[in-house]
Length: 129
Image (tube, rainbow, N blue to C red):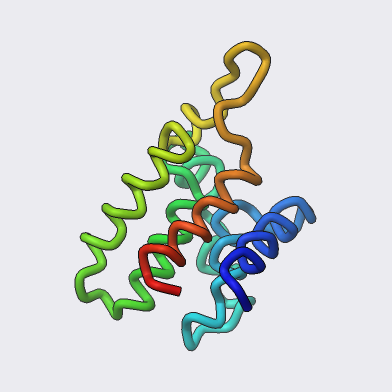
């Protein structure tokens, strides 16, 4: 599956109502691990609405970071996630859910669908998919 297709799958999962942002990202990247999509959905269940409903780090970004940890087997993951965070901030304008959902001039800074799409795309770019 191409990277853009993965990103659109994540958006579709998020908009279906059955997945939060973190779950949508991990599910769209499930074939990058030996863990099933259903297990990843369970693992990512608590990381919505900004790190467990605290309006902190975006769940989509957390999902990408979890997948990076699995892909790198924990070796060099900090550098990878830092790069993903920097790129996410550049594209989305922030990394905290509360900031991403801030409404200015009647428009949200970065809607969940865009956060999910960008998290998958950035994961792919940083991890060389």
